[in-house]
Image (tube, rainbow, N blue to C red; front, side, top):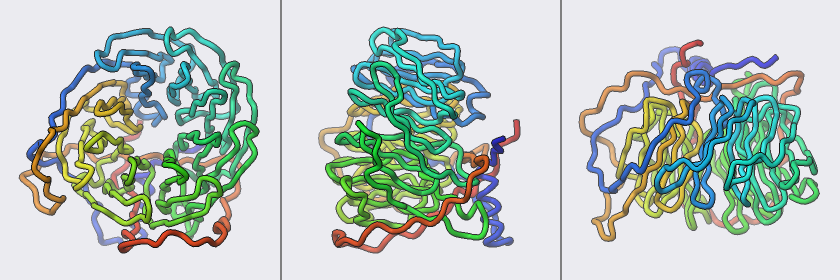
Amino acid sequence: MRLLLPLSFAALLIAAGCSKDKDVEPPAKLVDFPATLPVKKLWSEGVGGGKKQIKLRLGLGPAIDNGLVFAASHKGEIVAVALDTGRNVWVKKLKVPISAGPAAGSGIVVAGSSKGAVIALDGATGRQLWRSQVNSELLSSPAISANVVVIRSVDGRLHGLESRTGKELWSVEQQVPRLSLRGTAIPIVAKEVAISGFDNGKVMAVSLTTGDTLWDTALASPHGRTELDRLVDIDSAVRVVGDNVFAAGFQGRTAMLALDSGQLWWSHDMSSYRGLAVDADNLYVTESDGTVVAMRQRDGAELWRNDKLKRRGLSAPIVTSTAIAIADFQGYLHWLDKNTGVLVAREHIAKQRVSNPPAGANDTIVVLTDGGTLAAYRATPRVSSPLAKPATPGAPVAAPVTEPAPAPAAETAPAAETAPAAETAPAAEPPAAEGPAPPPATPPPAAPPPSS
């Protein structure tokens, strides 16, 4: 039997253990600022879901492929709409509770269910192509290549399915700790390698064709006296740029690894359960406390840090041409300048939390709230504009915040040993780091969500 424990409650316990006198800080209040990035709402529609879907904390997010947006609800409905207009192209109603995805690529759309079903549809028509089954709940979007669909299940397994038939080609696993955050990392595929993070703090790479383990590297090793202290989940997708892999973990590190060997080139203590985004030169991390940090890829040097959205339950960032976009627990979508980190635009999607990463195509951002509101926004960067000032303390009078930011839930896995501390990667000469490492982040000390 799985027992869910809100991480917000876990954070309160950790904070109480550190100091009985400190008050838990509320979510940062939103303040007025001069919007310098024009943003237009393209369209919005309801996909379904409701209050039950919000409470379950599912891995439902939008996907974009061939000019179409794909989204799903826990009620089993998958929709395809035109990216530019929101015009409905097709709707497929499945008699399964969708909990993961959909993912889109190579002409197919793939989603997973709470009961382990994996369903593939034709991207153009919505026709069902195949259905497969794994033996565990699915909570993250699959990765699709031309020949293999890769999906993570909550029992610590990474599965490779044949993309034309759904037949399982291979399966590998990592040990699941006794207590872990609710959720699993989205796997990615790069250069015939499938890469994913796991609940024991490891990043593993396997051959896409054979499923052979190429390497696994510990991003963090569990430590501390309590199970809460020992949480080191990697619940977000890693990112690959060239021959390098970038990953971030909860109560662990943000690091750069070699794609061919898993060798750690640099790392900084930094806690993140939502993840990171990359462009050609930099990476952008949403820390567990809501601080957004930009770092240089080649050496991990910090470029800027914005704490104006702390404790607002931020999503993973998505990169546009001039900004990064991040959604929060009250349904706001924020744009931050890539060069300085200052807020340049804000839109309100709906009064619903956004937990899963937005999807992007150039300067168009698509967001799916946990309650099922699907919306698209397009930013229009100005050709020439004065340099924005770096993020600084001080702000206008804030708008009130009516409720605390929720955080992801932790869950206990049946009959599993606590993950052992992993050996470090073999010694190698990393690139020289510049600048001091940023301080370690702590879990978001938010109040627990109301019980159902």
